[in-house]
Image (cartoon, rainbow, N blue to C red; front, side):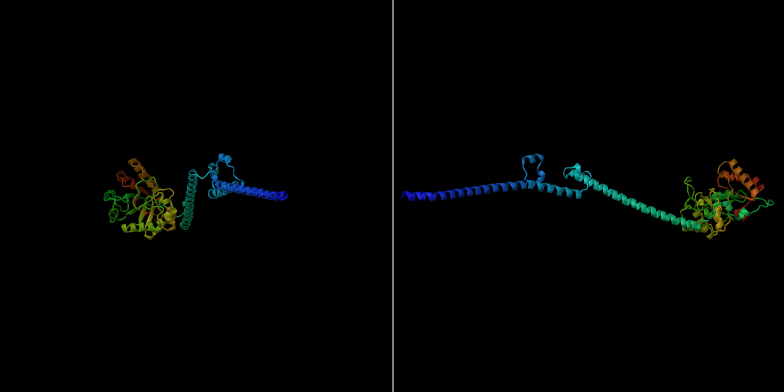
Length: 386
């Protein structure tokens, strides 16, 4: 019996070892499972933390697994590239993150860029306008070249005046022109002088509406035609001709003069120092005067007058004054200028002297009748070389 019992105990020993091994394996598996659970839970907690929220101090406190660190680096790289693509700023190091201050800088730079673009458009427009202006100027110059006479030297222009030979057996002539006549009182004073005076009437305006009517019953009269003066001259007449006036404007004005003064033939310039120097303007004027049967008398308010050139071009007589008698309004000066005109007449056979209806001028003329013993006062149309 003892032998049987001993065998039974011997058989139980190996079974007990197997149980212990099984229990050990089960325990290890259980512990591994628990460890895996906590490990996974820890990973999820770390994954939910925003990468940007981890400060330098937190990095020391939290040990980030290698995979999480790689994800953080990749995310920062993507954000940086996106930022650089959207905002190409030279001051990127000034800001550590996208802030309102950075937005302000971006807006300011955008405004500057927009302003520059606007200025560029304005500049481009100005350039185009300048180009157009230059083209217009070239076209004007071409037209001017077509109408201009190439001879500029006045001495080379020969007219009847230049070929006239004075016969000293004939009494020299003097044509005295009184400009700016516009009233009946002025007309009456001039007629009372008792010798021929060329009255040059201003065209009618609101200040002297009857200037044309007053001239109608005279045997001879002229028209005192307002033309552009220098900027220093004040008190320009209404409808004064300007150098930029078109031919149509000038022609209309000349036609109006013909309607107002149907019996007048001669017209001289009122002021006109700027106008009579301008080739294009004078050319238009002579063309219109020729059309309406007028003859121009150059008051010579500018030494650079080109009237002679166009008198020759349009086959019109060239008539030009020799002296002004009342630039200085005192009796002695006026009489001296009158004597000067008489001396010119004695030398060349004629002279043209221009004055104005000032009281002192008319008084000197009345008191100087004795001076006219050696010359004959005439109307302009009686000049010996016409």
